[in-house]
View (tube, rainbow, N blue to C red):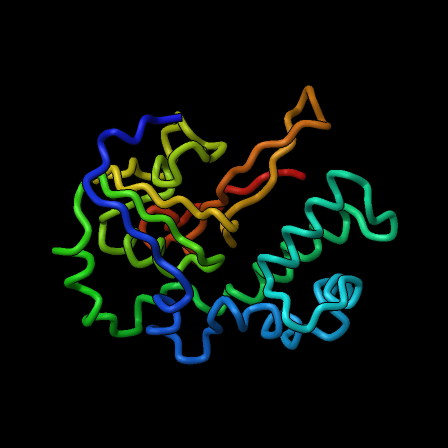
Length: 214
């Protein structure tokens, strides 16, 4: 893991950033209900009913669920349901990706003057609008841009472009772009990788489709 003693600035970006762009994007406290309503009989709704608290938000719910998975406290729900929830969240937030044909001129000062080389951005969002925006404007790429998370194509001639300004994005809740990767010789062990395609990363993912086998 890289040292963080070379940080220029540290930013924390939450759901309000995406909502400023997409008016129908939910805030964090609204995300649980929004994902549940987006898919009939969703696994997320099943898990929510299992824990039975109407005031719980998505991060509280998933934290409790993950802890129970680690301690085997809930025998009815397992890793299969957890994987399904990750897919449901990714499917929902895919509608909030960066689009080249939409005018984001008002965000140009953020790209040109607010962020600088060696900045670290802690993102609480599952969507990849921020990454797509920065990638399109040549300020960031997923190769090195997610810090310790590397893609499977590192070192190949057609791998994504290097992170030009050493801006690092830490997505502490997870991301639509993340996938669990199993090691070939140790199938019980896993790491996290980032898939690369033009839909998520319009510049560095152009004409590429890097993914992972489960």
